[in-house]
Length: 456
Image 1: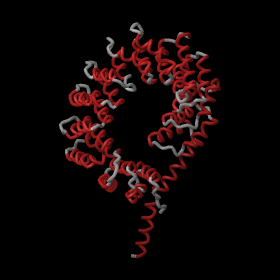
Image 2: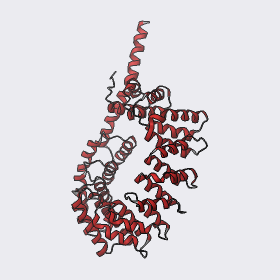
Image 3: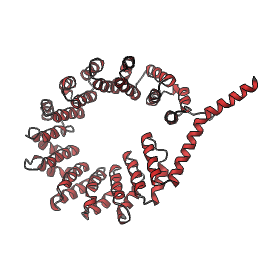
Image 4: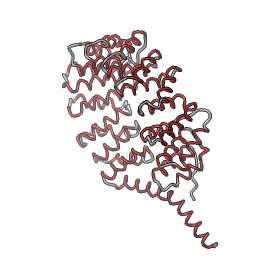
């Protein structure tokens, strides 16, 4: 009997150790792929890292591209880092531009896009020199990149905006490039371009897409000198220009701005109503709450309802919270409305409403309302409470003990979002789960919460 017990104990220890060993083997395999793998294998690994939202192999990827000229590898790594606005590749990206005769077009384009996303000031003169060549294949991406890259330094932004305005006025760029150029001027956030943009926005003989781009650029800059041009476009005949003008009012203030936004809710063109909701959200416009309530409850366009609910969540005064509570509680409302209202409530008063969310989640489960249940589950997983965490701790523990795979993953999210170190044992158990997604996530969360996983 003792001998059998000893064998059982040994097998049990091996069973518990297996996930940790498998995890280590997987990480070693991934490092081998980076060092020795084909472009296809590396591209697949990057796709996996992106889906896992993990960065533990970033240093290895930085080393990989220093000497590589493989287009697929370079564009994959530039894209992966750029999406996260992760610095570290600037030197290699600038080299791809200056030595572009030895690189593919795709590599040069992805390098510029990366430099724009990380707002690399060192890249501005390099990209400007490239744009000066007027090589059409690089223009669109180059303009977008230089606008963003210059935006963190006022002097550099002013110089770049002046360069772009002169480029527009004197080099006769093609029609499809002009909108990109206008947007790039806005991306600099420099006031140098305001008068130029205002002239385009208010010119009724100008092409509609260019007027819309100019209005968006004026909004991005946010200079009061551009406000008059935006206000004048609120009542223009073209509905697309109207909606863009309303949306451009977000960064501005004053009674004229408030009135223009509220008038936007009455526009028969649905995009204008969406823009009015977004502008109300950006400005946290309390006077818009009755309009937002009406749109959230009655608008025939689902996207208008969505934006109205998001705006209520951003305003989050007592009246707005009351509206959100009503939208969430009414079980006759569409699933989409209830889920989004729940999300806004959790972002503003999770501690007070988490228990109600779980009750509604259980109600949806009991009635097999799959879409509603999954939506409430996601909201619960993202909830962050202040003060008493007993309710969310109880739910997270229940999910981790006896939930489905998805519930266990959301239970882990709850632990991380609310610093629930009290769930140490549950996290350790899931770190050794046979499901790879669960075990990897539990390991990452344990590290974040400074919970040591015993190496059994």
